[in-house]
Length: 313
Image 1 (cartoon, rainbow, N blue to C red):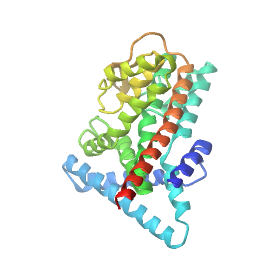
Image 2: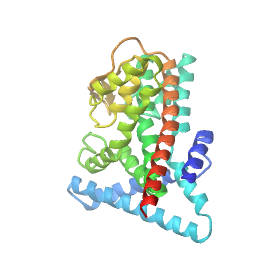
Image 3: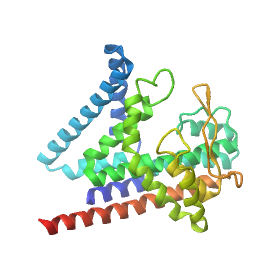
């Protein structure tokens, strides 16, 4: 577990430095190449997508195990394991990108805010107003607290660096091919479904932990989370989003534009008040607090299991 603690702390302190090679970038390149050849060799797009998903995951796991095996043989295993784990966590990077949007809005630079938001979301941002930009940012930070931080932490505690990297591979495939448009509705089907399965437990952990940092609105946060946890096309995304919506007393969801098409989504939370710029920083604080508490909870559970297993050996 010490490797996880070190990796998590490094992420909190420095985030993802651009000068360091990033395993997820390499995985993204592999995904792009594998998609090209899968489409070329298979006429049935669903079958192509199934082969693509299995191939990418197999290659990444194989390379990870080989890398760790070599690292152990030359006595640099801790360094490589920590680096791989560190590359899976995204708390500081997520906070940093969200704060850029916050600063742009504070400076009344709506064009810059739209541009910064476009780096974080798949929806079109060119015509969004301030309220829509804030909403999209809050939704993104809330959702990525689950799939960008809590999920890799969860899998790191379960299976170390290999399982954390496997999860990030699944999540990256979903973010690249898991769209419900004409190009990816069939090809990305299995990648999207696998991501739904992988995020099932972490999303629900987020949904039940995030309200703890709601202050006086904790009861309302749980109420909204339980009521609106299914108000999303994804079986997982509404858990963290509804917890944050209830905590802040705002409404998320609604229509958005993806690839030139308006996508109608159910609303999440109650329209108690208009969104404010500070809702971005409040959501970031909830993200950090949830992440740290999850590290503590996962540690206690892991240690308890080890003690129980030890007592029975």
